Every structure is written in C-alpha cells, then in structure tokens.
Amino acid sequence: MKTRSTTPDSRLSLLAAALLAIGATAQSADPPTLKDAYKDHFYVGVAINRTIATSTAVLADNVNRNMEQVDRDIALVKQQFNQISPENDLKWQLIHPREGADGYNFGPADAYVDFGVKNNMYIVGHTLVWHGQTPNWVFQGTNLPPGMTNTPPAAAADANGTNAPGGRRGRGPGGGFGRGGFSGPRASREELLQRMHDHIATVVGRYKGKIKVWDVVNEALSDGGTNILRPSPWEQIIGPDFIAKAFEYAHEADPDAILRYNDYSLENSGKRRKLIALIKSLQEQHVPVMAIGSQTHVSVSSPSFEEEDRALTELETLGLPIHITEFDVNSAQGGQRSTSGDVAGNAATTQGGLVSDTDRRLAEAYAGLFRAFVKHDKSVKVITFWGVNDGVSWRAQGRPLLFDAQDKPKPAFDAVIGVVTGQQPAAQ
Image 1: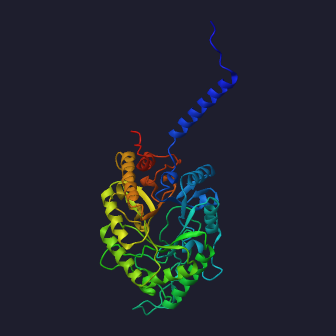
Image 2: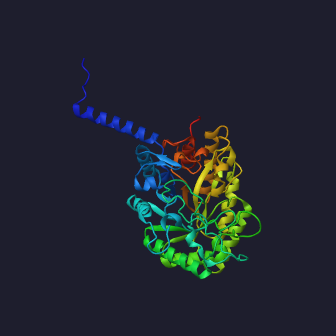
Image 3: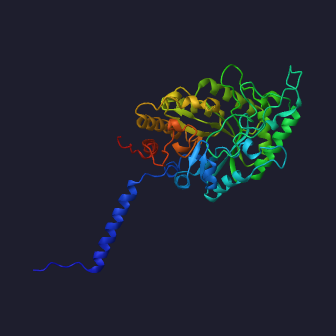
C-alpha cells in the first residue's frame, strides 16, 4: 500500500513556513537596539568625535582609530542611537579659535550637524559658555585685574588641541583658565558681553532649526565651599549675571531651541543644592532655562538605584526636563569615589587598574541607573553616553561604556536592555 505523496506546491509551502520559523527564531534571539528598547521612554544618544562625523581615521592623540575601526564606530552609532552630542567641535576653542568674524572654523561642526541630519538624529549643541576650552583672546583686554599695577606677560594664546577629534578635552596652554584663574589684562564687562553675544548669535544662528538643544552654560557651579558659582573668568569679569545673559542671547538666536544648563556631580547632595538654588534664581528672573543637564559621570560603586532615584526626585522639583548628558560608569579603582566631570582631575580617576569582577559590577550599576531613569521617564527625556565605546572614551582605562573598543556589546549592554525587556543577562 502506497502512502499519499506530498505535491511540489505543498512541499514548497512547508519549506517556506520552516524558513520563516527559523528566521523568526533567529530574529527574536537578537536583542533590540538601545533606541528601540527605550523608544517609549527617552532618547538614547551618544557623544561622537570628529572621526565619526567626518568618517576619517586618526592615528594620534587620545583617539587612535584606523578606518576599519571608524567604519565600525559609525555603524554602531547609526544602529544603536537616535541622538548625538559633539565631544569637542562646538566648543569655543575649536569653532572660534581666533578673534573676529573671520576667526571661526565651521568645517568640523558642519560635518557633525550634517551627520545628525542625514541620519535623522536629535542633535545637541555642546557648549556655548564654559571656563574650559575657551581661547585667551576671549578674556583679554586692557583692564588690569584688581590690585595689579604692572602689566604681566600675556598668557600663551595658541589653540588647545585645535585638531582634537577625540575625547573630552580640558584646560591647557591657551585654555585661558588655570588653577590661579585668568592672568593678564582683561576685557571689560561690556567687551566680554559683546564677545559672548556675537559668538552665541553666530554659532546658534548658523545651526538654527537643526540643533534642537544647546548646553548654553557648562559647569558654572563651584565644587566646594559656600559659593554657588566657581570664580571663572566669566564670573570675575561680567559678574554672576553672565549665566542669564548667555541664555538670553541663545534664546534670541533660536527661540525654538531647548536651552540647557549642564553640570557634573549632581548626585552629590551639596552640589545639587547649589544647582537648585541657581536655577530657582534664574527662574525668578524669567531667564529661559528650559532643561537641566546632569552629566552623570559615575562609578560602579555609586550612586545606587536609591541614590539616583533621590537625586532625580529632587531635581524634578524645578519642574524642568532632565537630560543625562555625559553618561558613563567608571570601572577603574581610582575613580570609585568620584562623580566629577572636571577634566583636570580625570587622570587620577582612571588609575589603579579595574575593580574586581568588573563586568558583573558594571552591568549591575548600569541596570540600577536605568531603572531609576525609567522610573522618572516623565522628566528624564534624554540619555547621552559620553562616547560610543571604551576605545574612544575619555576614561578609556576605566572601561566605562556598554561597548568594548572593538564595538562588541558587554554584559552591561544586555543588562540595560533587560531593564525594559525583563530578560536577565546570561551568567558570565
């Protein structure tokens, strides 16, 4: 007795069904991307360096990436993120290194913005007014500092890392601000306000409608003591109202842009109190501060979920959106007690080798922080990792990001995805 044979059409249907089932299984095995996993919560973004924005290799400085690596970095940015911030190329030192209307260098910044536009990303501008990476000419003039009777030699005014495509730079020769403050004859209040106005009007105006969020003032709070503001050249020459003026000028240049105040160590209750006092004062003056930027340079030791929850709860009292702007989690032993984003002290935070059981502790730290962000997602609108992978991070020795130097996901990536999917990362 013969069994009934299967027709060619039915065999093809069965094969197609099997292939679809295999494909579905394989597809379900791949974790969602960061931007897709958190699409109902907030933007998930990344700071990109010049190599990514311009698709060029660099074999110098603290970023050392050949074209194969750069291509992988670009692919990862496009795959995982829907928002970008520039590491350096919109800072004053890089975009406006020389005095005057012809002293701008727009090429790298244009490339950054074009990258974001072409890839349909939410674009952030970082940063307009900061005591770091601002060339000396901005502060120079003919007025002697109080108590000075003889004109000292002018500080070196050459650019600080003008081809710096990589990590988060700090002060150096030409930075205009060191441990002793700005030295030399100073601009008057009126001169410095005019320079600030012209710079902001030019830069913000150039990217009006493309850059959606600006870090207008960066790191103006003092780290210690009772003073709210640090004694930067901006504060020393203009006075404390330099912050209000910067926001007013930025709002004039692009009334539709979200204007952000950005600072670090807001996980620290003392620094957070200063931030709240500053923003409340600006709000009382009707200054157009529209969002709070919390850098969130933290470590695998702290803050815990409970500590971050408390910090976000207190920041929410200001009634403004909260953006996590420069996010990384340091795994180096030297940085376990630090939440500082101060560039001058960065080297010490990456010393001493990695903490023990690094992958597990990094994964647990990231999971706890993202649980806090999701809990507060009515206020938290943007999460920006400070670098796409460990290889280009300003804290590379601390292995602080979700992807290793080869752009491979680490257990921390699975832990972050697991916060919203409910899936736990595989045991290591």
